[in-house]
Amino acid sequence: MPPASSQALGAAASLLSSWRDRWINWRNGLVADQRFQRWAAASPLTRFIARRRAKDLFDLCAGFVYSQILLACVRLKLFEMLRAGPLHQAQLAARMQLSPEAAQRLLRAAASLKLLRALPGDRYALDDLGASMLANPSVGAFVEHHALLYDDLSDPVALLRGETRTKLSQFWPYAKGREGDSETCGAYSDLMARSQKLIAEDVLDAYRFGRHECLLDVGGGEGAFVAAVAARHPTLRLQLFDLPPVAERARDALAARGLSRVETHGGSFLDTPLPKGAEIVTLIRVLHDHDDAVALAALRAAHAALPSGGALLVAEPMAETPGAEAIGDAYFGFYLLAMGSGRARRRAEMTQLLQAAGFTDIRFLPTARPMFSSVVVGRKV
Image (tube, rainbow, N blue to C red; front, side, top):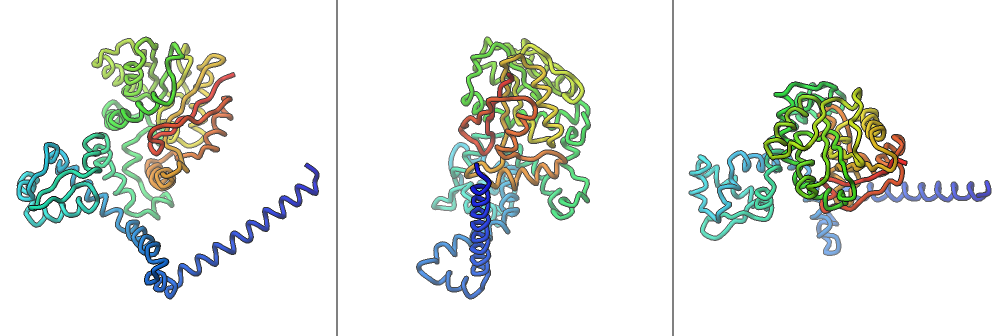
């Protein structure tokens, strides 16, 4: 492109940016004006938008209260009580060992959040969100687990400044470069195993693993993903690699499932070469737990283990996922900050990492629930 054309494009982009900035400043000044807000709330043309924005802002303020109501429902096993059908408020109060007044307060709150449905005669049934909690028991485990995150977020400014010793960093020892022992690894391995079922099914639906003869799952935990692969592809040879105490637990867990044929290997991809023989390496919800240097080391280790033409598959939540932007940048942004390492990456950032590790033909595959896991594949030339 001639220099004059480049200059013209640069000038046009600068002008566009200037006009956009002016528009944003004008709009923000208008919205921040109390007189405009009173007019917008009263005008038939803008009333709906004004009320929706007011509710959105209040929901941000009240979000912690909503999450604690959900935690109370989980701890009191309220959803399980209603599995068979509606119950009267008095029956629920007795089963939860709450006073009638406290039970009514919780039940009404849960109904307002669409967890329960209030029925005539002071009866309550599950609503869609409550029924979904029963369909996904791993969600309940994470609700309980979030008590650690809530403690770590009690002073978010101190967390951002690195002035707190977080509970999540102790729960996930590898986040600080520690392997942990069998007991500490058991706590987080069990939590991850509970969350893998839906993710594994989405990954298996997104990619045809049957084209390969051997798969290596790096950071495979107790084997939830390879077990799902084995059920879908019984002839596929399977390998699992994780920290030594986790690999030991995986060996026992897989044997209990009748999957002793899965080869388990203990080590750290930072200093232990990955086992050879696989034509595809998978990293399921692994990279987002690590900063770029460690994530790149994992990818390079996978690249070194693969033959020419071998494939890499990464599945994890990503930032800027359409319709779930807050999950990547807000939820995972602060969860991983409290954990001590990692971040949800955008597509361009993930592509750069894979390219830096030597992978080509990078493609993003659609999944049923992209807010939980997006899938990206690459190939070793």
